[in-house]
Amino acid sequence: MRALIVDDSSFIREYLRHLLDRMGVTCEEAVDGSHALTVLAAEENFDLMLLDLNMPVMNGLECIQAVRRAQLHPEMKVMMVTTEADNCFIARALDHGADEFLMKPFTPESLREKMMLLGFAA
Image 1: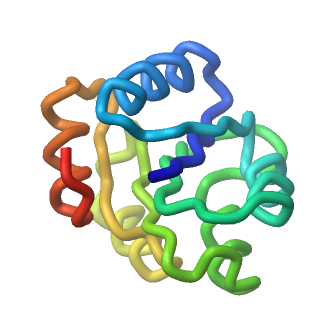
Image 2 (image 1 turned 90 degrees about the horizontal axis):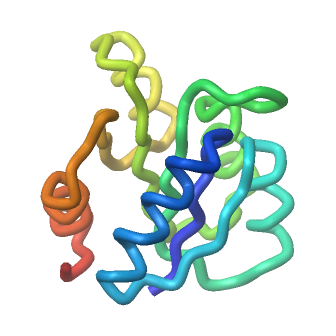
């Protein structure tokens, strides 16, 4: 399984990579939505994208909209990893193609639960 971690925080990227590595997931990283689009266009076989909302250059909603519109990895699941808990945001993200949410701060157990909800054995 391959995942793309998209977050402008190097700490969050490193933490998610560490947790996913322990689950046997191969990870790539991107620092913002624009960088994520470049990685997705250049590489194949991503099963999951963990996507932050608030990032410079291109935010998470803009990124997910571009990914779904361009049909980059159409079977790929998208998990928003964010501090944003507003129901309006959640509805917009789902409308744009998000599959699940992981609220920051999160625990290894909560990440594992969300992975299982998306159909990935943990």
